[in-house]
Length: 453
Image (cartoon, rainbow, N blue to C red):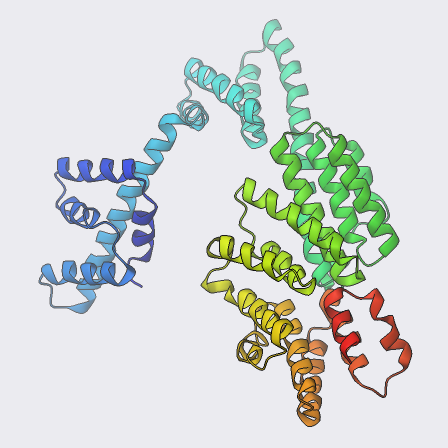
């Protein structure tokens, strides 16, 4: 789509910003602004409508050569984008304390001591109020540079004070960055623990706990605990121990309520993930998922996977009415075109549980090839079970072999591959009876198939 960025920028304008820009175009002597003003007055254009309007604009220039047309079009689109960007930045800096930071930089570069000092002091106050460590470090560096230029007794005393603040901010910044890094990498580790990169990342022993003890802020300390729990995921006793200690740390913390709730959500998500692998009690998993949804709605965190898991658990637990109510209420927020596989799989499962119906196969033919490894694997199990109920033994064998190849390709993803392979092995009646009797240790969805065989 030509001019896609411009289309997106226009759609992001608030009513006030839109009106400001229309008025600016009226007052501008730049001929290019006339066309921009005309475009802005056509609110709510679809992508197709925008493309048609842009085509008409290009044709109005009466340029015969295609290359020249494209060149002028790119220049006009770039101009229009910059006009919107400048307005947004102007509005932002008019009300943001970041303007002090930018003005301090400006006058520092111009070598104006008094103005630099004034705006830098304002920037430091603003950065301190919101704990913006990058701005604090930069501001302290400006302070130190100017104080060191004139080493009076008063300045030397002040340098010592600023150095201490600079050291404290550096340590906080280090822990903020490292706890975030381990938080992110540990979350990815669970999905693919044997990846080569993790050999250099996974900390030894209680390294993360030691890092947490040296951190001055509670949020970083708790993130270290959470990362330690994730890196211990495949050692169940340690995993459950560290996860519980993370919950305890959150409960005892003095963090802001929003920060506490976001951390609680992360821990609940991790415990639910543990349930998928270790087969925790389904009722408890539902309770965790319900709490997680409440947090997401309260803080407008629209995580489709979290919502999907709650609906998934409710269907398995035969809570069809609750499932239907939640889906109707929140479907438009959590499920969009890009993740419709989640909803299609849920509908297949609902049809199967209600009717044991072949109707479920229509969606499964799509979701078996979902981009989500979890949806694809769970869909393959359900597809096999439906054909088994039809006593189509040959096709069941074909589907089982196909599913095993799929899981072999994705064998590094232990979280999903291991339990699904276990179920597929149990489908084979020739397998040891001990395999089939171990279903009670599996997540309820997997156990459901073994019970029906």
